[in-house]
Length: 187
Image 1 (spheres, rainbow, N blue to C red):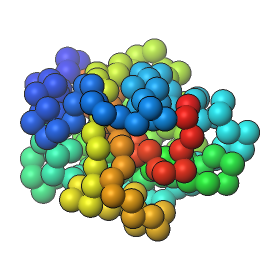
Image 2: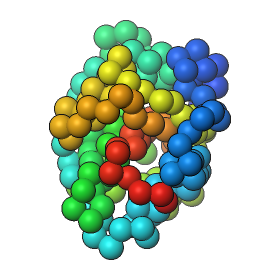
Image 3: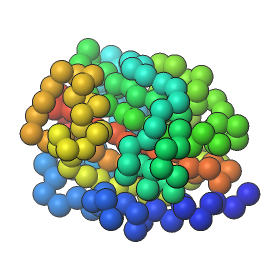
């Protein structure tokens, strides 16, 4: 199966301020934000006590910029999973995954059964999964991803840094957004 036409994401991300290179990123976050490897692996190596806290999973409406970036129709439902990545007892990253509903029947069908297992372990161990891009953005209270991260952590900084990737399996996209919380250390 070939990739759907909507998987040309470069222009879509740029139009919504998700950029391939972030300017003025804090030195502390620079490596973690731009590394194309598994963030889960980096966190597991950095924190002796690492865990995933499942916050929510199920069908939901994606955020507007996700709908546009994934080429979905407005009002479309998708499988959404929100987790906190916990290092040494503190929330370090808020992760938000969006999988178009049609992809649940394809190669991504195991995603809905992950529970509190890290998604990164699945993404980087399957050679058929391709990462299509990595984009970065500084988000604030105007962005729904910021509001979601803050609602689950009780923090309200002026802004947070996030990175977003689209992974492709059998022509179906999975979008993963990772929001770096203030408790994150240099990785």
